[in-house]
Length: 223
Image 1 (cartoon, rainbow, N blue to C red):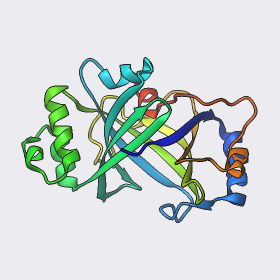
Image 2: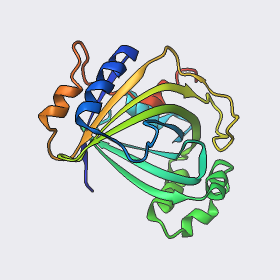
Image 3: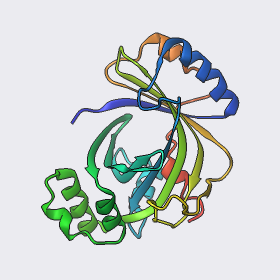
């Protein structure tokens, strides 16, 4: 399993404006964002004892989380994702879902998953059985992505973070979403073996330090 380095910073709107200008001068906008940004909607999984949330808040060194995700309200392309963390390194595995399959998971109709061709879908089924993982809450936000070839660097600016509280109807474009507390933004920097100095300089901000920010944890502040 290949792991990537990852930094996260909590930033504000002024920081976004400054970093955006720097990145436009040295990096390229991600091809997946033809207009410079896109909307992200994710449905995160947890169990009744909030195992995933507690492991994150407690800083457990090796942990994982599952989510279902789509972009720009387009439910024709949906991904099941598993994010694994080990120390300061991260790995992401992905599998494709149809809208019908995603809705079946939300509805608790999961027997079909155990015989699915994709091992990640089968793994989620097993975790839903053994660890009682269930869809927990929806997380929405806007993302501006940039890429830089050397080091396979990806930088993202995430803001307008919103929570679906305890709602799980994430295929419904009109489901109720509210701001996840005070307005906050997140800068994420991911790379493989090395981070080029030009990118390190572009994302450097006085008074900002690497943090373990989690949009999922942020969206659980109301329950």
